[in-house]
Amino acid sequence: MPTGTVKWFNSTKGYGFIAPDSGGKDVFVHISAVERAGLKGLNDNQKIGFEL
Image (cartoon, rainbow, N blue to C red; front, side):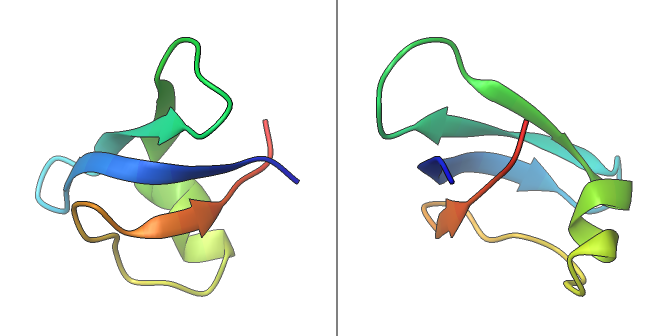
């Protein structure tokens, strides 16, 4: 599973971006994926695992 750091996440707008640890383009993340993972939101600079 890839890992990365949350660059920013706006709970009001319901989306944000993750910077992958492996480099490359930032990954878009939508609130629906966050909620499916059982979370209410993400914090800036939070380390997370993610699936594409």
